[in-house]
Length: 577
Image (cartoon, rainbow, N blue to C red):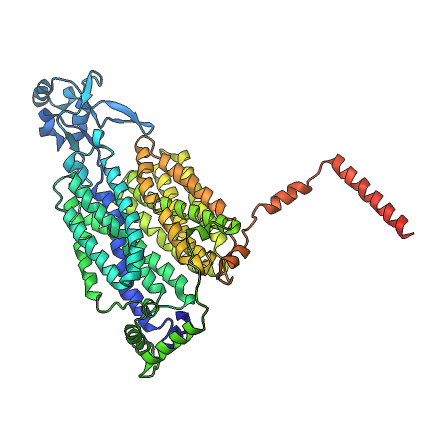
């Protein structure tokens, strides 16, 4: 039986749903935002240079003078910068005596050339932004420069595993217990990472946190859309994304307050215990309870919904609910076939749609995560950049709300991705203009944020009912490969800042143009069977251009065509005569 047919009996979007969604489920999105991106600051890599023990007394007050004396220059990211991994081989004991006797002027006149070597005595770090990070604590620089990237890759691998496992848990345990189980694991692992004793233990705990991140985001969203009618699912999608963006903005505020990585790890973990106070307020999904035959629990929740929504139900509602479900099941045709992944690709039209949706999903996930990871690398104030990256998403969702209703899915998806992609590509032209780079970055973030909202909605309307869950799961799991690959792409920006933006911009533009081949699903009936899905044909966005090209003829071709037509008219007249 379709749950949407009985939901109006208790109110499909009344005060009960509004309270649960806005008061409980939206704050439940914050843990994902906190832990998905706090690692960028926990493992931030500040400016650093080789430590010279003899110069330690002057590092705090005269860092630039110390670098001028001891560190060679090199070309990095198109500009002349202090080396991070080389130091001049000099008699620094003599230099310190000169420094103390004759002042800074005579010391800093030392010729900036000579023999160099790698860092033998560790590094000095710029602590103006962060007092301590895992990079500064365990010297994850130079030869260990890739260690922070490896940690992000493993974090993404954990997310891929967690996304797969959670699908089974929420169907077996239910939505509510699965959410709280993952929340507990996230809080415990996040807190233990704050007391990690070395890099390996820290990576282990952070990977455990990564396992929980996709599920922590999916649980509130799934529960929300299962409690409302079909017409309000776009609302739930938009509001969930607004809550996620607010979580990013709030994270920037937390990072601004806590600049030590251990305190920051605790600050984004322990406060989440407050969400357990909603354990007895947050209901289980009545849709899932009915689907699993738990009518008593479902009836109790629906009676409470009806009471708060101002609806009247009979005292024996559980019996009536059970009879309705059993009656609908007896009338329905038993399913004799099990659908699998091959059904997504076995027919030509379905195969093309599956490949297109999956590619766009991969592009969206990769670029959204990539741009979020990239914000601190833009230069200037890292926390401010991240704050803007979250803030610019909010106007996007306000624009999307009416646009999805009036303009449909396909063109909004295309325009969002292409605009975001072009903005990312344009950064190549303004590499040395930091403010312009930041503006283009924000435009790119707005574009991908829009596409990230539209795609799941469009995909759910493209896949037939019999394989909708399977299709969405396959596309999203392949999309989760993006957070594994993207840290490596961002790492390539160590020597060329805009290279990751060029790669992500190209991926976005390709995804946007590919989306034009999808059919428009706005106000269209949902396909139920594979045959229905096969009948929903792909669009031909460039058919008009090819037709115009076909009809464009040279003067000689036009004369031949005209002569042929004249001959045809003569033959017709002769035949009629």
